[in-house]
Image 1 (cartoon, rainbow, N blue to C red):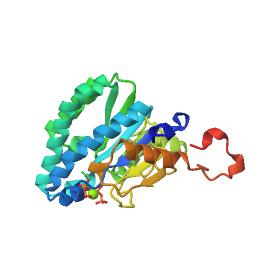
Image 2 (tube, rainbow, N blue to C red):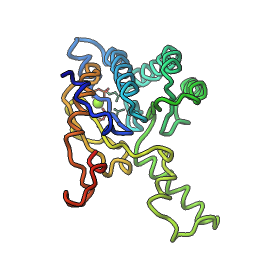
Image 3 (tube, rainbow, N blue to C red):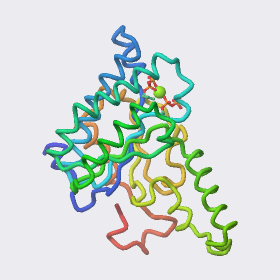
Image 4 (cartoon, rainbow, N blue to C red):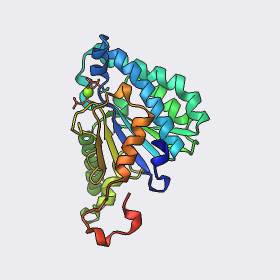
Length: 251
Ligand code: IPE
Ligand code: IPE
Ligand code: MG
């Protein structure tokens, strides 16, 4: 039985989030510059997006650039921003053909103007697509996201449109960039690093974590299926005891 056939479609996560890591190390292994790794990382993005959409995953969130990544050398940042613009231009047709909506989370206003404008145009051009939402985390960090959420909530309390007692988990979720999305049931990180690097801290409170040593440019559909199969073998208890779980809670 192929890996794809081993996946139980009824227990598919609605939302998968991925920390795409290892482009630089992969390039180094090939005796190339780091930017060569980023270019080849686009192939993996294409593979995983296609695999997720084909299976019926509703949301795929990809960590593409963190707020900390602004500390990288200027030439690497420029190359990443150019690659983003280029990829959006090339892939727009494919996104529409495959009924995939593009969305983005993060401090988007901090992106270079050309990049921001291009992103907004691609989001607008795909907004009616229904099969899957592909979310790019750009200039994103969870601490930035939570800080801006707290600022917005504090302003509402000050204005008198929200009372302190009404600040609930749902209210906090509603002020995050992910407000219209389910929380990811599965978080994947490539490249063998076992850390979260400031990604979706609130939203992954109960996510299943999957770490693989594969470097991002080598991540493909089969690797994605392997992660899903691993996820489907797990028992999600949410603090409860096994005897108390309904069959729908397992994945
Ligand atoms: C991930 O690969 C891509 C981005 C963070 C933009 P890296 O560039 O972090 O590659 P490594 O971790 O140095 O190998
Ligand atoms: C996390 O990878 C950010 C992205 C994948 C965009 P990094 O390579 O920047 O994270 P660290 O430095 O390993 O924590
Ligand atoms: Mg890295």
